[in-house]
Image (cartoon, rainbow, N blue to C red):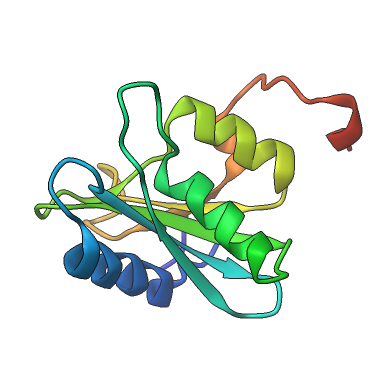
Length: 139
């Protein structure tokens, strides 16, 4: 399945995030898993770290885990919540960070009313209209 603009959904990413959240989500500390496809084809996963001070979301953990593996280019990312909540969109902070680091990234989202129940993928830029772009990341 592809998004209306032709961005293919990497279903292996969705499965990897679903498997990670099912296996490792623990109480209130870890409730969301993310998976990202790197430029060299690897899948990197991570879990959020909940903390009242604003611990990192799963997407940010994946960014750090990928960098720790020498993978600095991410192509597509997805986040899946525990307890059957399914694919969830990135929060505003994550949208900005993802755009800053990976302006060509696509994000897998849950279905919308016109997708017939299928996941869809959109460019991160579409998730943050009129975004602030730092000088070092400008096109």
